Image: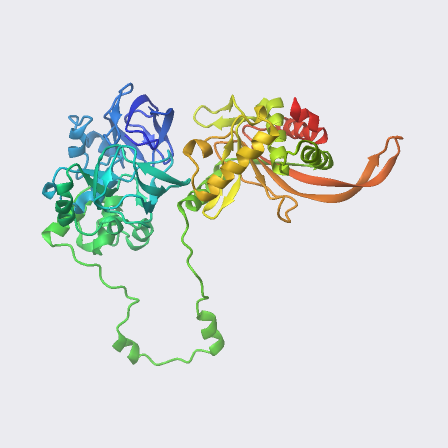
Length: 548
């Protein structure tokens, strides 16, 4: 059972969206979970097959961390899951077998393998929580409690940088912080991995510190890319290698040719590697042929390389810049959006002069200071209200368009850690001045990394404004599951014919701004996109429409 909100400690299984035996892809919704806040979808982080449902639909008050299902890598492993496995503690004891049967708290077992809990006094292991529905790992930004300090219910233990923002992790129980396992600054700590140990009795703190050595967190982090590049079934009988076996082989530097596979179709399992390590039959991987001994090199005749070619072979200097969790997720989501969402692009030019005059009037006559972007947000919200077909999203599971009840505008805000999109909810019902104040408040929170989940999760339409830069127009990438984003360029003075009061056209200088709509073509066809931009143009031509 995942923690789908910072305060969640138990949940109800509202509905299973997958059945036993169904194939699971990364991102598939396994079930709907009723939390202390709302009913949320629980997405799978790995592909495989749903072998057994441990907690049936309708189950109430299931504690966070209790196994609710078992998945396997191959369909033939489904029959090997013991029929006696049920929910609760029994499932934890049986969930790892020679067939590499896995459950969602696999990381917890791997991470805690170096902690001998039998030697510890009564304690609680604090795991890395899932502070957002899409979070699968996080960074320890700051420990707010020190080892030995008293913890009350609701106390902030530490600050965790998630895929969205830096959030505070509150304690659900009282006690004392005995040992910090993931020190401040730890990167990419998986959800469910132990980060600290707490005890009830302060006299047990020293016993915990003595029993638990240095933090195993950094040592336990697998590097999946290295496993893919360094491990390949050689000329042995091994045809496939399970992910868990790859990690063990990489960590211990083993020679695959010395291992024997017991899984179906020549699959090397985790149990095979562990058995070889225990028996001492596993040998280290032989050194690469590229590593030639120095005496062999000396026997080869030296060849003179031209200086120009030698200079060309020198690698260019570079610097590795570590990415924040937010930027990693942004990179992944943008790629998925361009790959999976059919983008439709529509552009139009609007006249800015009525907007600029209206803004000047608000400042001079009413002492209300608003930005151009604040008025753009209101204009877009009113246009979505007038064209409700544009305020919708595509439901891939049902294969149909779902219209949204409220108009919630996501506003792109650039921060040091990446682009954040705080939300102005019910923007069509708010005044421009209230929108302006809310945008300023949310932008400050975003730059400080203090946005709450409900302040950036959701939204029905996005706006990205680069008008403060010398950017005339651009095409933005849709932020799924939304179906539209408006790219706003800068204003430019142009000369065009304007009809005067006498009905005669005369050349005049006007301010123009290019707007480009990126829309999900499954939701927006040409008619809906055209109707939305037409309504938007009308709003810019007559500011009184925004008062209606």
